[in-house]
Image 1 (cartoon, rainbow, N blue to C red):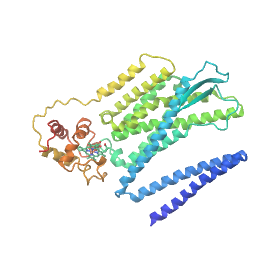
Image 2: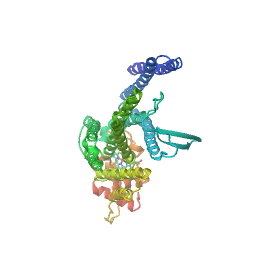
Image 3: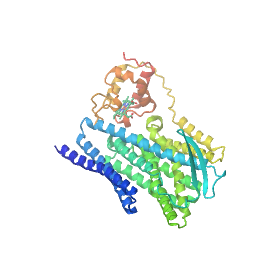
Length: 468
Ligand code: HEC
């Protein structure tokens, strides 16, 4: 009954908001076509924007309410999975739009024709063909004589990437903090403490980074890079000593992503707004604004590859599963940012010998260091399957069973169950990978498997995984 009332009210609010987005848009169009006063037009477009905000907030509340109602029922997992699908798709889509636009503008800047037949007021132009059409673009040295009414801003890509990413962090890690954010072998803490530390770390990271950018250090590129890198590695070290390895990686990526979105929100867009205003009023432009925005945008450019790696890192247990996983993160960050540096130099026509080879060497070194040690213990004794099954029952079946007894997992994770000998044999390759090679199962070694037991499983698989 309560459910019906709550949903009823929320649906009504949602219905009104949807209707008014349409109504305000119509009114705005009429206002524009009848040349109504500027104030009226901007009021309507603002109102239209607010309606969208209300829609988003109401949908968010509806989801929270749904979560509250299905908590501790079999539907909780299902709801989480669908939230995961929707939010993840949004995050990927906005992320592609943001990074795609950013790569495109860096390319434009580097590929502009700056010499042939360029009008005085222009920095350059570019002809391009794409999707069956020819495009001609011009870049102004400073600003056009009059700022056009329809000026496209690239900002929502960044904001929505961050917002959807932050939501995904909640859906995957924070709502299930006990299950996958906290690893009691790393640090015992409550869900609230863990989530607050995660969110708080982003704020701290932004403050530290912003202070660094405003300090005198920014004038010395090399020193700034070294200090910035050390701070980033410090965060990587901190995260891997607070959270489970996967969560630590994602937090590192989310931290860098927060700096990127923060750069857009707090520096790049405000500088551009100030520039547009100055151009409109015909007052001279403050050249430092453009410079500051450019520096931040360059930092974002160097963050992209490390962030993209982290976003897919969850698929690679050999990286986060390595003992000094923060060092792996540091190596991958340095190597991938180095590759981006090489690409940037190359686009500008500044060819270098060593940047690319050194970056690749760093990545190869990471690959080499994380390789599993060769296991020299020969399996002398024939392993009895009954012993293997006993280990699996004791260490895995609490989670991986059609009826798990674990306090967090009420359904078998990834659908993996080990109820029968056939179930076990079917997945022997994955078991080898997760239990023996990367040691990322049992999850966070919650069930305290011993090295001898891992070895027993290895020998059984190496001897042919017989179940008789
Ligand atoms: C505390 C609960 C828990 C325990 C105990 C546990 N697992 Fe898992 N397992 C998970 C979760 C959660 C996932 C999904 C996330 C992941 O892949 O890390 C998973 C995934 C897996 C996968 C990957 C499946 C895929 O589709 O890629 C394998 C294989 C696996 N577990 C094997 C084992 C084995 C073998 C044991 C016992 C030695 C074990 N697990 C113990 C929670 C557990």
